[in-house]
Length: 415
Length: 156
Image 1 (tube, rainbow over the protein chains, first blue to last red):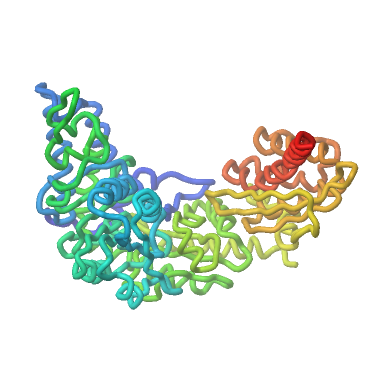
Image 2 (cartoon, rainbow over the protein chains, first blue to last red; image 1 turned 90 degrees about the vertical axis):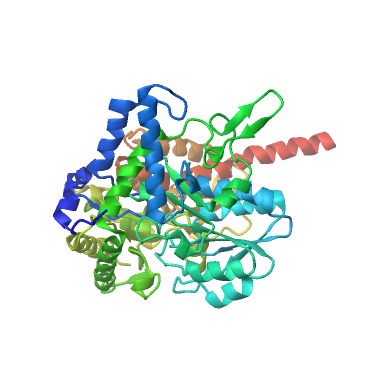
């Protein structure tokens, strides 16, 4: 698909929600690491399915079912193309990235890991890439080890080289920290893990929406991500895995659609990826996700990254001048996604978020489901602004102005 | 007054910046921990009930946003010296003010009135309520203590 020119006004027109006001001010949506907004193309695809060809898939001989099946499988093929997978069969649809990680921990973890095997994760992970491995440790006896982060939010690569070793059987790492924006050198770590014969799961929930993705270049064996953070609907996650792994893994959830034959004694499994998609899937949202991928592909992920890198540069420069601000995350902005995590002296992040909301600026305040990162930094929470393709330098100005307002507002009572 | 000014009344910011009854009560008879897992706000409450069931001493520690800290400070100031049952009744009054938007009870809610504006901000209600729920929890120990007494009596 040829890429379209970067026409910021045209892009913004595609997102109807950006025209609304919040608290009497134009909405400035900077909570994209939590979820993205949806373009009309995605919303239209969603309603088109329900309006024109709503039917269950993979079972009907009737026309609607065939149309729905073709659209659903068409979306699978687009996902495969978007991340450079070898075949659509390597794509499993789940509810979200969290479920995809749980699928791997449960299915691969129990079938191919033994008590005493080491699973290595990092201090930068989102809770969704920590807790499933803690469960596997508690219930199955694997040893869970963490690669520590450095104070600047980067990963401690020397420690990574020390910890990833012959006992490592699985490395599960984020490609981009949701709390700090850190871009992790996944390919280097994956190569290291592979030298020791381990498999590598990459949590791409933050990276796939914002960076060009090629699973071969990543060197991953598993990649997980979520549709709703990349212009698609909620309720759709993706697990990509090398087909040999999917073939070898036992099912995760069981029921209809994932079986070949069922008798009262036993069942046999359907082929991949259907073996992992028990029950009626989220047909409408998967189909609409296909439209989101078309939208991103038309703009080109290199262009999306360039745009966000530009906004990040402006935001970091201008926020650094705010009195009493602490900016977290890597200083090298080329090794960082469009995320600015910050704190203000004497003002709790929730209060920052509240004042910004009053100015129509939506950010996240909290621990970002990454409490180990917060513990490392010795804080309970940060305020976080995160950018996407529809954000503009003028919106960065609105953010910076609102942060200055917060400083003034809370500075009015001095003790 | 703007919505924000209504939420962040001067008196609240004052309590946030110089909290009353911050710290610990030596020899506390009751304590409880409260947390908002979603925001990471945490409060630890210690108090001493005297022989008449009055809150003779109370203090809080922990961390959180201005609303949760100011509410903790104001709560301790209000219940200190009051009967435990009166303090529990105030928890109910406070929750009605937060959740149903009821006006502050006429009696003597005093500076607590400043928290009435929080009711307009549903996501902040849990910040304001944390200290009060923790107080309720701490005083529930009273029943726990009497239950322990019952066990002791039976073991005699």
